[in-house]
Image (cartoon, rainbow, N blue to C red):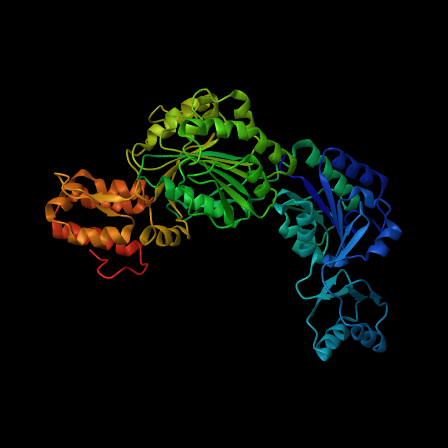
Length: 582
């Protein structure tokens, strides 16, 4: 289930002339019985609302006074989310003859034509207040307070996310909270400007429109209303148009050999998921994400495995994602750890729609043949699913059939797509007219930074990756001057293994490379050791691909040293130690 919350405006949306009809109340009751939660978001004062509406019990929270007040109907508790204007403000307005004038817990409200008087009084008193105009009403609130901030407070109190929320409204003051919701809906009587900015417009007005919306949510979870504004950019095609992925319903695999750009592609998509505010759970069998990801908590290390309780505790906060580091779990036990934990994770997702994305690295190891059918069905429940692998043919075939997209990078991308399509069965694209195969004429190799995306039942699209913004900074911190550890260090040993010089990061690599003899340098160069290390341990597949070209191209020891050094310098501009250049 994608949408767990319906957030409703009151006047002109739920109600007509202040009253909610019985059909609309019945529709709200059906939503509550389905397990969904209701939040009201209104500009009215709480007492005023209570005088015209007696079904507070249907709502988990009521945001009143245009975002300034939060009420919990079950506990009969009301919290002010901001401080009120000073009493002299309302007194000045009374002295100026402003009528009607309503003073709530926080909001001060009147109607047109008193807007100019209100603004003038704010300036004269030097107050930091904002004026919100809404269908003739003039509402004065502390700066930064609106229906969106109120809704955020309500969702935080419930442990829910705006990404699992549908919002419905009709007027100017609804813009902010509607845009904060994953899906925004305008009832048929809404102002034209509101309709233009919403994802869905109902056929019927007011309460009848909300009843219509409730029916659609119950029928198919608004499956036909995919808000394109949330789609995640992945790459660009030749004409510059972006290739974008839906954040919900994408079940994808990224596959390619080591050094092909697989990690960079993953980092780009993961960065966009994170920046968009979607919560994710990343299963990290080999500790490749120990440096952390923005807004994500890393659990587990080489000494200790994470516990299920720790993982769930992090995911209870919609603003936090988690990286599950399995280095503390014996290699042979890691698939079992994941499959045992998966039902707990799926239960959390069913309860509150989170985590939005499940991401599994080394999918060929974590989901091999024999992965249980019931576990495959659990995978289908997640809004977004991303598998990363160097061996797609070793991933359980039922798991591959659960996917609807694949990204291939590096050498032989056609093999990746063919494996995927053959597992997908009848849902693959139709045969190409010229080649007779479902995939058409595919390249033998993709240069660094390019990818092939196949979304079923469509055709392959070749695109250039939009690189991740934070990848360079991550490498600068960890790989230029950090400590990779003995296992991931580079060792200059030479053809006779007469040396044992350890480079624990790129800075040390540059310093040692400058001092080793030509025979040692050329020995490792000829074997492709430098690019292999940069791909597997430094985790920079783009740099690895560039260095591999130097290894293949030949040249003197001095020339190849200089070229490799320039490639490292171009990508890593962190301060080097003295003599750190090649």
